[in-house]
Amino acid sequence: MNPALIAKPRRPRPTLSNVLPSLRATARERLKTGDVFGFFSTTDSMLSMRLLCDNYYYLKSVGLWEKALLYAWSNQKYTGGPIHNDQDDSWAVLMPAILAASNRAKLLEFSDDLPDGDEFTIYRGARAEYARGVSWTLALNIAANFPTLWSEASNIYATKIKRSDIYAYIDSGDSRNEKEVVVVLPKEHPITILQSFSTYQEKVSWRRLQGFPATINDL
Image (tube, rainbow, N blue to C red):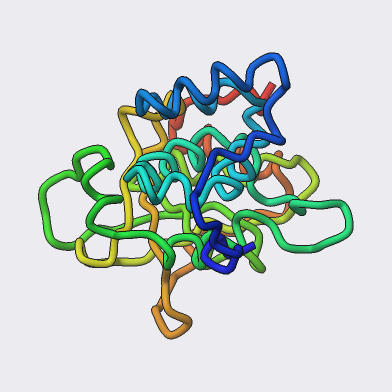
C-alpha cells in the first residue's frame, strides 16, 4: 500500500474505521489539536501504520503526515508480518515507498537530534532476506537483539552511511531507546556481515560474551 496511490478525495477527512466507535470522537479531537500521540492512542498499536496510511491525505492537508509517520512507525510493535492475511507485503517492505511519499526535510525536523558527524556506522540484526530493511541502529548491542524469534538463523550487519542518507532518527522519543536510523539503502550500497547465528540461543550466548545487557527474550 503506497499511500500516495490512494485516490485523493476532494476534501480530505479523517478515516477512522480502525478506531473503536466509542473513541472516534476523541480521535477527531486529537487530530484537530495536532496531538499525534493522542490520535494513535485511540487504537491498538499493531494498527498504527494502517491508521496512518488510511489518513494519508488528511494528515498531508494539515501538515502532520511526517510527524505522524515517525510516531506510527515507532509505535507499530511488529512490522514484518503481512498487512492482510491474504497478501505477502509487510510494512517493512512498503516503508521505502511510504518514505518516498514523504518530505525528508520535515521527517528530520520531527526526528530526534542526530549525534554530531557527517558519517556514521550503523547496524542491523535480521534474517538474510531482510538485510536491507529501513530500520538500522547506531548501537551494536541493539542490533544484536534482533530478530527475536528463537528458532531463526540471523546475522548482524554493518555499513557506513552519510548524514545526508538519513530519513529520520528515533531515539529519546522512542520508549525502546533503540537509536533507530531510518535509511533506504540502494542495492549497490555495500553491507558487511559482522556476526552470524544459527539460532537465537547462539546469539544470546554471544551477547553475553560481549557484555551486552540481557533482554526479556533471553529469559
